[in-house]
View 1 (cartoon, rainbow, N blue to C red):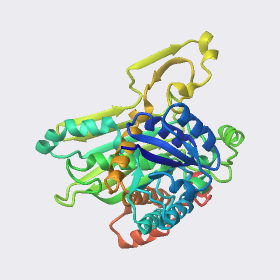
View 2: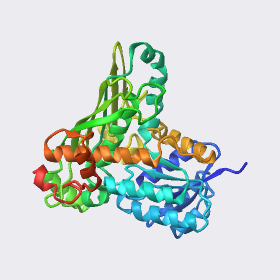
View 3: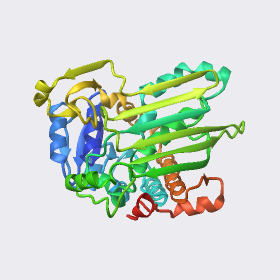
Length: 413
């Protein structure tokens, strides 16, 4: 049987990470790349590491006609246009078995809903890539606690945090292009994994009903003139004019539709975590039991002293977003697997081969976008947002946060 041919639209940071995941999956080739920049480099890596043959294509239509599924890893502001081109290619005869979209599905509820409708018009399966739901540690604790939950009851509180020192690319820092700041970038991860683990064992991923959201957004490090100037020099983004939040925290309250029980997911995200590097912290509390996951608890540590530090110029060899190349360093030997990238690709390929949506589909991605935007609204208004209120539901359909409009200074300074 021929390998499943996967095509990447986009060749930036996340595409390179996902290519490392493809290398760990049998029966899947990275068969094509289309991107405005970096496509040749990524294709060369794919061919050199044996996960090809990988070809660079010159258009969305061309790549769609030569692969089994495409994964949209391009920047947020290009998603709607790319989805429109993919759907046009399918309607013109491209035989795609599925479409993947990296988080977030859209920068606003309107964009996310538009992408859902475009995908529906193409009539093919979808997979929304939210890697933390696929993390082996998250899945393992759920399996381990299945019998405990059945006897004691489901988790009542989930807490999830993702923090690092800031994004790699200028567009990620620009709220008008990215759709916000750290809440848009990483809050979607934390909200999704919190919702997922709170769902009672055996229930669908969206079983619990979101009823309210409260949140705070702040600019704590990158608004300070010294670091604002550093950001301007390094990324060309002026946070004195169009700032985004570098810290966000909040709570989503859910209701069990069968029992009426309320449970809560707390999320915390920052671009000011100047420690070892990217840290994922998740825990859950239930009656008489709990779980905890910390991605920095690695079985491997290395130490590099001052005299040896010049030989270790690339700090990210040890850990994504690492800010140090000396001292005692936590080393993750397989980040693509640890963070769930391997498992989400495996799931998408299996589901697409069977003619169905991935474990998380675009409709689910739109629900996560709505929760993130409700969090922005809560922070702006300084109050808890009632998601059961029809007026709020209607307002969210056309809502764009002040931060995403480039008016973050009105609430962050």
